[in-house]
Length: 438
Ligand SMILES: Nc1ncnc2c1ncn2[C@@H]1O[C@H](COP(=O)(O)OP(=O)(O)O)[C@@H](O)[C@H]1O
Ligand SMILES: [Mg+2]
Image 1 (cartoon, protein in one colour):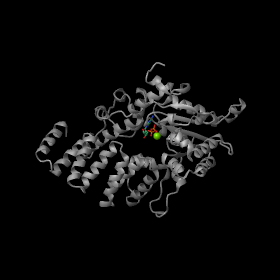
Image 2: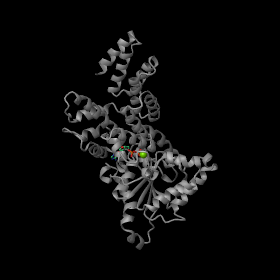
Image 3: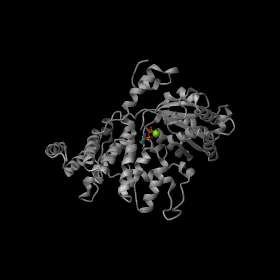
Image 4: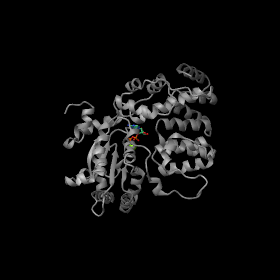
């Protein structure tokens, strides 16, 4: 299948626009060529002709998924599951979409159902996500999800699983790991331990991944608080929940308490200042300050794509007093990331440095997408022989060519804040990354 074949299909369709199998074939071919946006249009066209067409719906869901439109992916899959409640491939995609969309509880539940129905099910992404709470498929089938167990885990990854990011790793090591290992030394010099690290930068560049790896590095418990948890607290304006969360983390020390998209909590927008949400912010700050509690062994890491929305009160000493820019990986970093992501896959002779060279501006998530595409292709090619055909440099380059780096858009916004709202040089790192003279 190539662009030529696509053109022929389009021509055929010009003559019989209502030919469903033909249009479906076009849609699927476009998806095969990673042209998901066009594929989406064609799947929709099929569905206009035949609204309950399962293959077209599933194709549409996959096209959405690959464009990272996880919300609509979920909607379409749920419709499909009404038509066919037991289809494993539907549920698998649903579970992935939940996971990518940060609906962790739903993802977990969907995964449990999948494994219960098919105990031999293996899916790398999901296995990895849920590795830390494996369960016996036969036992406690009716038990609800244990919220605590869901949140808290001991990550099976450490700094070795994080490519590049050397500067950020060093800072974390100095601020978080060393104090834990050398408490007495810090005490001897009267240096206070505590405070948190805030990572910011474009999406997909490893903030969450590194936070997890930090916990793994020191064999600490990891508690991740996502946007939906935070929003729940907003809605309930529930300082109590937040307090309980910190207490849970203190009880498990050493523990990394990770707030993803923490800007949702500390929004500086004045409307929130007035609202009940202000109480939540104050609660968070006093938990960080450890006023009524001992924060020993509690390591707080925050991540945000939008640091400019955060209340400046968060940046005071003892709070998020180290603010680190997590930039897209440089060439060496990309090579290291590719190496990590390809470990254990059937590889031929692969020149990773040339792939790294051709992927300027790609985030870790972009590189993952390239590899996913490449592997999907390889899988298809291997079906006829039944033998895995090793991945070669050209396969990766081909997949990289059709993928657009997702970090650029973020820099368009960031540049403005860095140029016009750069109080006390907070965003100097962005300017130097963009090579803008101050
Ligand atoms: N430096 C890296 N090394 C290895 N994997 C990475 C790296 N950066 C990103 N990834 C991978 O890319 C994906 C997205 O990264 P993530 O940490 O969620 O980004 P962020 O939190 O910055 O949006 C993750 O699946 C992660 O495994
Ligand atoms: Mg993240």
